[in-house]
Every structure is written in C-alpha cells, then in structure tokens.
Image (cartoon, rainbow, N blue to C red):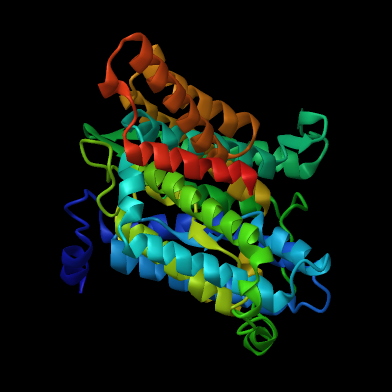
Length: 446
C-alpha cells in the first residue's frame, strides 16, 4: 500500500514522506476549519436558513473538492468556499436582489463559464502571460495577507473605519494569540543537533495549534463543546441543498453578479495557485506551474458541485500554505485535509472549538515563511515596481486579487513607457497580456 501511494503521488520524488503528507494535511485543515463557523455566521442573515445544513454542506463540498484536487492534480492545494461571497449572497437574498435558488443558479453559471475557460485552454494562456517577476512575487503577496489574517484572528490588530488599531491586551484571547505565536515560532524554527545530525520538529504548526487550544481552556478562551457529535446534520441538508434555479438566474440583470463571481474566482485561483506552487517548489524554471490546468479544472468543477449544495464559490485556499510549510508536497496532503472535512460532518463541535488565536498564530508563521520566496525576484526598479505595487495593495487594502490587478496595470504602464522612450517595440506587452489586463479591469467595475 505504501509503495502504491509513493508511486501514484511521487512522494519520494518530491522529497517528502507519507507521514509528512498526512501531518501537513491535518495542519492545513486546522487552519481552514474556521470556514465552517464563518459560513454559518455569514448565511445566518437569511430568514429561515438551516445553519446545521449549511455547516454539513460546507464540510462535505470542501472535502470532495480537496480529495478531487489531490487525486487529479497531485498538489497540496486545498479548497473551500471563498470568504466574503457568502455574505454577499445572504445580502442579495435579504434585500430582494435575487431569491435563494436564483443566487445558487448564479453561482452555477459562474462555475460553468469558468470550466469552459479551463477546457478551451484560455487558463494556461493567461497564467503564462503573467510577467515572471509578478509570478514570483505572488507568494509574498499572499504571505502578507495571511499574516494579517492571522494577526487579526489573534486579536493583535483590528480593522475599523479609523484604520488598523492594536488589539486589546486586557482580553484573554489576545494574550493567548501572543502565546500561540511564540509557541508556533519556536516549534517551527527550533533545530536540534543530535550526533552531528540536525533535526526539526515534524508537524510543528499542528502541534502549536493543539497546544494553544489546550492552553486556552483554563484561560476561558477555548470553549469546550456540550457534545462531540453533530446533531441532526444530514437531515438538515435537505433545507440547504438542491435548490438551484438555473432558468431564473439567466436574467440579464444578473450578468454583473455572474461576472463578479467569475472574476473573483479566476484571479483568486490564479494568484493563490502560483503562490502555493512557488512555496511547494512546483514551478518550472520559467516560473510557470505545469499542473495549473488541472488545478483550474478542479476549482471550477468544485464551484458547480457546491452550487447544488447551497454553497457559494469554492476556490483554492491560501491557508494551504500552512500544510506546505509543514512539508506537504503532493496530493496526499489535500486528500488528508478532505478526510478531516468529512470527519467534521460527524464531529463538527470538536473542531469548531479551536479558537481563532490558535489558528491565527499558525497563519502568522505561515505568512512569514511565504516571504522567503521573494529571494528569486529581480529587484531592479523597472522590474520590481509592479511587484511592490501588488504588495502594497495586498497589505493596506487587504486584497491580494486587487493587488494582482494593480501590479499588472503598473507593469503595462512601465512597459509602454520603456517601449516609447527606448524606441524598442519588443518591450511592448504581448497581445494576451493586453487582453488579460483589460479583463482584470472588470474586477474594479463589478
């Protein structure tokens, strides 16, 4: 069995082991598990919604997506519902923009269009059109975003209309966040020298999350559940799943909504996919990701499946970097994460008790580790300025997809200026780059 796994997933070839892959998958799940609580919270604004059904459908579709990604693309990239989108769908329903069934018809259409883009090969064309320096800088851009998400989850920073502010250190959750970061940092970077051999702690982030969760119990931050098993889970699915109105979603008034979902998913996957592949050392010498076609296909297919279960756009999750940081290099990592999501269908309260301070601490360390990928960048001013612009938007606007868009605009502007002043037409961007930049502008329109 072990040999078959090794041959199929090429575990040894990628410098990993089955044990490392399983630990990495568990670590990724631990940093993604918050999506279960987030989905139920986001959809709670819809009158009459069955939140237990939402939780089970979220866990089930995330599990299927992760397992499909692992089997088909053999990458440690995991998927789950995109943040923000569930809240938008709840708003569309409550303000009368669309019915519940029409909303998931809109999600279905965006997934169908995405899969057509994948089948027609346009995905690889756009992916290869990204300038190499931007591809290499994407991992750091995602790293800034993940670190900020982690600091926010730990309570160390908070965003408001007044801007970013420091957290309240009189709160036990904030103190636990600091403790968690210290634990995860120590476990991740400490090395032991035994008989001339250097060793690192395997599964450092997963251990850190567990220890931080346990410390949070006497501090009153980790709330122990009343019961371990999910109550009334599968019977509640019927209130959430299979209520798609495809015909109703074909109204012309919904085209902007479809475009918004499609653009967010496409460029979100483009950015996070490159970032995660770079971290996992899966890019080729030109900065391209050979398995990207398969990643896009699973991503778009997952959105279609998710729409039938009443779940919004499903896409690659940047938190997959936590498993990659733990050594995950193959699809076995994603399959392991999927297994834990399946387990959640039965014992969700056990996973939901993990506090934000524990997962946030791990994400801060993951964000820092992603910055290491910037060492291959070309830091000459004309090459680095688009990357710097992308980073700034990711840091201050909390939007790495928007960062890619701005980075491409700056790249186009600099390339045109260079072509004019240096009188060298070869410096002009290629046609695919012009088309992709024009499409990217729709991100700020929709």
